[in-house]
Length: 141
Image 1 (spheres, helix red, strand yellow):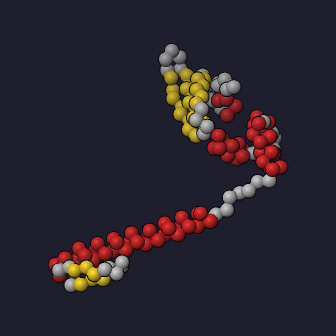
Image 2 (cartoon, rainbow, N blue to C red):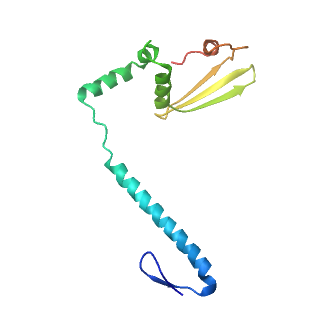
């Protein structure tokens, strides 16, 4: 049996190998479709335009970045915006209970800059609201 491959070459297979040949051909065609989809996605991704900022916008962002505390504490900053800011700053958080010598909680923070911070705090006995939990941890410089 002669078969024409997608790349134009002929492939010979015996009758008893037709199932194997058909399966290989299906896999080959699936891979070709996947390759075409990936090439298309890559082409589209290259064409996406970068966000261009004016000099005034760039300076405004730098001023805000230099005073993140004021942005965080501003009454106009929503909880969702605070969460998004944390996502931009913090890469990973690890919380570990420490039982020796007293019961404490260790919080390790890996920032996107590569810097690391470690805070150890006393957990409240019975937290009833977020403010109770925050009061048990020292502020971080």
